[in-house]
Image 1 (cartoon, helix red, strand yellow):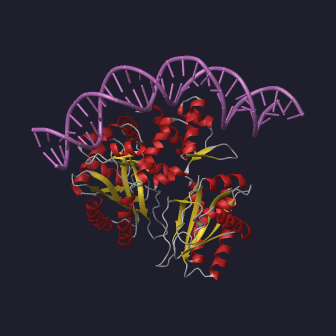
Image 2: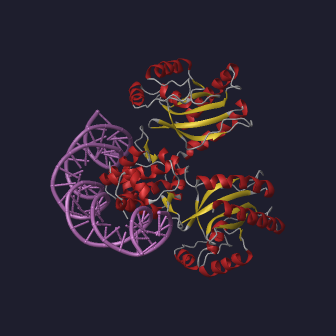
Image 3: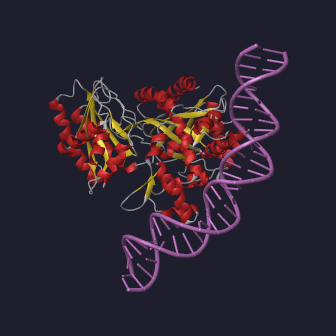
Length: 244
Length: 244
DNA sequence: TTGTTTGTTCGTTAATACCGCACATTGTGC
DNA sequence: GCACAATGTGCGGTATTAACGAACAAACAA
């Protein structure tokens, strides 16, 4: 583990909270000397990973990150995009495609519902696994060992009264998900938000991604949930073979 | 300039050509020892900047880059998105929003024309400045010194018979752009592709970005070009104040 | 003004991360 | 099926490297 590269990651992550930061603020956040921080930051600036506002002197994330970020999982995103179209057309609710990164899921692609009242997600967003439909779908199909590690590292929080915010309830929920073949998020993350999710499994049955259909609870009737679940599963099967 | 961080950039750039690479291929591309490369690559993998395909052992760009990339210029992209909508509605052709990065322009946001035959650009794409409308628009409004440096560092290539592929013709083109207030790309990059572009200038008259309207030459009549130019300029003025 | 921020630079030193070598494993041509 | 040639990976010595602390210029506040 190379020290300066790890520090690069820490510095870049500072911009999760604030979009513009000065050297001193960054150095405090990462706990490094100002001069050390300056060395790394100015290197990152020369490389385009950071960018300096000439007038204020503040730093922000640079275009090189944008460029590289758009190359990530490019084939997966093109494959998924057609599938998203047809799913939204059939189900009328916002469809998301996510992948796991460490203990979180990252929203990679989406297509929003045509309804005025709809679920609107942010591409690039990172959320813990236990409190989202997609996260639970992936979690449920992870090999036992990996699942245990992940749960052990989870910091549970009650987001609503329905959140599975303990190891016990989460584990029973995961069992249920495996048995029924899909995950249901009934206002576990946010009141009024219901979400149906299924994993995308590779040939070794490893969950490489997940797709979900999110809508206002008022429209997500049991009948619609059943339709969603069916559509999503057949879609996931198609995607599984294309994403290899 | 911190060595290992510069090497990180070199390694990540390897993935511009190929989406999946092994350690040995990477080490050859960047000219480093296999073990040195391995150290950096495995660090990057732990941090999520790279990702390893378990079955093949090959590495590819990781989700952390995607996550960070989506935070870049977030406010600029939200501001621009509404403007894009109305421009496409009015002009009926693909609208692009780009920013400069070093000697290139990077496509940050777009909204495509509703026509079946339309210009389709790729967000994240990086192109040299001299051969695109947006690039020339920015170039023309750079301070003289910066402009000189940039032109000196340009590697001219004839993409079509119309490309301004020499310093002399480019300079006279830039002069023309400043005098008329917008840039026109008449099949300079690709036959059949015409593009109108204007810079977005900050209060110091520095070009911080550019927007363009690209269409098939057959639809981009002189009259339409005039309309485009007007719409784009008023749009750019609005954007300039919002992007500050 | 004075005081306290800010971003930036420089030289020393200790720690760091590079290299070369060696190993395990896969896959491939003979 | 066997040897060969790739691959990805691990380990220690060493010299380069990058971190630190102090000090600077400049901007801003009191």
